[in-house]
Length: 355
Image (cartoon, rainbow, N blue to C red; front, side, top):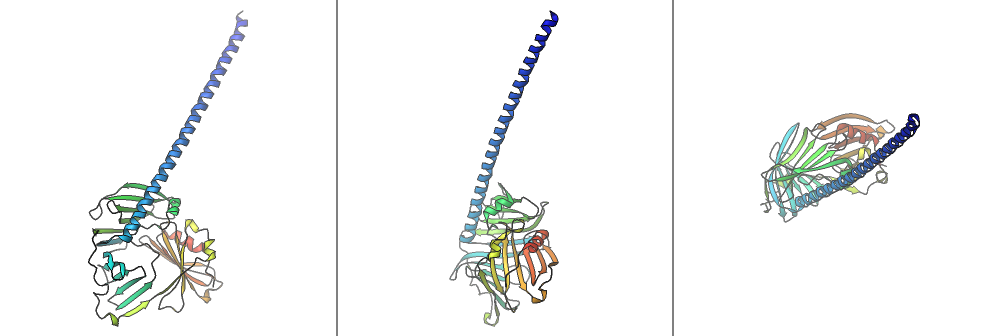
């Protein structure tokens, strides 16, 4: 009797245990499924938050760009890096020649830079020389935010928004552009809460050390500054030597349109540039990952035809790398706000201009 009952009891126990295990598995499966659904939901929410963050940052950058182009202001600008410090008085307002930015150096040799929509002028009184660069500059100079293509920015940088500190006596919001890999620097920008104008920017290395900083130390915003005559400080300007560079912006070469981009740097502009001291023009190509800008210069030299490429020298000044080398018929120079290895890689992978 006992044995007869033992088998069914054991069978029942096994059946109950089996059901419990089955129910347990179902429960675990439901928990995992719910957790997966929750995780997917959190990921979707997170992705939405990232998109909203990027959209807000894009609005801030565009507002800063508009402010830099449209507002009148005057103040003191300081640029510092590991190898030195430069300060200047900056004024932006209207003149008979249109809206203009005037930058007077306060350190080192006297120099006045005048940015017009049609050209950039550099007055060098110690040399009694006026240098003229026709056309609008492709480079975005402070206080314009250093963003060339926001869509590419989000590919190569994470974006963080934080409350900024006071800069030049004004409250700010800060955007941190954090690189997704070590082939580029990090960039932090401070924006005036009231006007949107960018007041400060820092470039940082992989360890967070500041390589370079541009900042207003004081700023008068809104009222039109009393701009002097652009050439008023200089006497006997007619005796100065006028040096005008020849710059012809060109359509993007077909080879660059097909260029995939080394480390995420894509072509931005192309030009033929002839300095007065040179006998022939050289080719200049500009590349960007959305924030960092790299210029590559090609000078043709028939003596180098057929020779293998080489990097002859490199230097890092603040955040700016410079690589000088040669490649099959050309002297090459790469100059940009990137690590040295990134500039070398870009130089090594580029196609050459067609003669």
